[in-house]
Amino acid sequence: MASDVEPMVLKNPTLRWIEERLPILSFGYRHLVAYPTPRNLSYWWNFGSLAGMILVIQIVTGVVLAMHYTPHVAHAFDSVEHIMRDVNWGWLLRYLHSNGASMFFAVVYIHIFRGLYYGSYKAPRELLWIIGVVILFLMMMTAFMGYVLPWGQMSFWAATVITNLFSAVPLVGESIVTWLWGGFSVDNPTLNRFFSLHYLLPFVIVGVVFLHLAALHTHGSNNPVGIDLTKKDKIPFHPYYTVKDLFGFAVFLLVYLGLVFFAPDLLGHPDNYIPANPLVTPAHIVPEWYFLPFYAILRAITFDILFIPAKLGGVIAMIASIAVLFFLPWLDTSKVRSARYRPIYRIFFWILVADCFVLGYVGANPPEGWLVTLGQIATLWYFAHFLVVLPILGKLERPLPVPESLSAPVLPRGAAVPAE
Image 1 (spheres, rainbow, N blue to C red):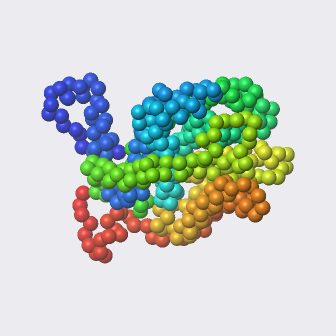
Image 2 (cartoon, rainbow, N blue to C red):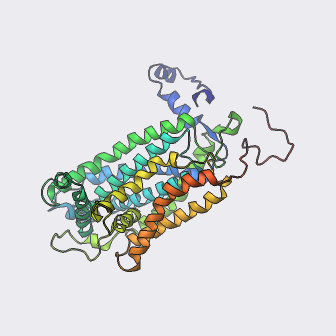
């Protein structure tokens, strides 16, 4: 991609002096200004840059909140109330941070499904996709640990339930749980460890994001048509997509700030405004909305599978629901990237989207009656989509003709293609 970028010309002698010793200006120019980008990207491609912007917001608000938070079981809940009531603009910082986590996951999930629809995981972008899945995994770890920090009822019991899952691992399970807790129950050492890791992991995510961008800029962005592009099919990133990204960010802020100012607790749980009490178990322990599909998959395994007990089977299924995404570039055997030219795949894609919503609904409700069966069916279909449908469909489906260039779909038959 670097060969497609025109060299930067610096007229200012001071800037030239800096550039000769630290070529950071040319680096920024290549990757933020002159970076050649497909000229047909839609607003679905905004969600990658939106995720980066939210990550910055989360880090900035998190650093300031950490200045006023006390990671001790006797003071954590009160310190959060102190932030809300006594710290200047503390309520705004906390609501920006807590709702920012929800918006972060919403944007990343849309980003992932856009990649699934347009085949952005296929060669030569396999490593780009894999790094993206690593980012998702790190986000989940960070969000779970952050959810524990307010030390309300749901925080405490969510930490107890989720960490106890590791006890299902044969031989070393109990040792892992003891190490996570820092003792023999969820207590002050647990809260300290979670606070430390919650503060650290966002900076790890930043590092992985830079790897993600490096992989992206090696082979360039995918596009809605899903074909490899020539130089005439590309335009500079600035100003075309910087303006587009800023417009998308402005629209996003309307939703984000609307949530912060008018419904800040809409996505939270009221039990978390009750101080943690190990002696009182909530009627229904439920994670944040962005974990609900995985929680439903965890609870779907209610029976032993051969020599694997149900509890361990649920943990394996939950982890596998994310791990299967690592192998997606090889599970999908079709040579065509974009679902625009795969009519049958397009149907299965929307079935998968609906299936994820069903899993979220099941995860939000107690595992009773017909919901247990529905969760098992939805879980079975989730894995069948990746492990059965995609490999077979890629062999059997007859895609529509794919255009050779971006000009082909829009130019009338017989019209001349512009020269490079």
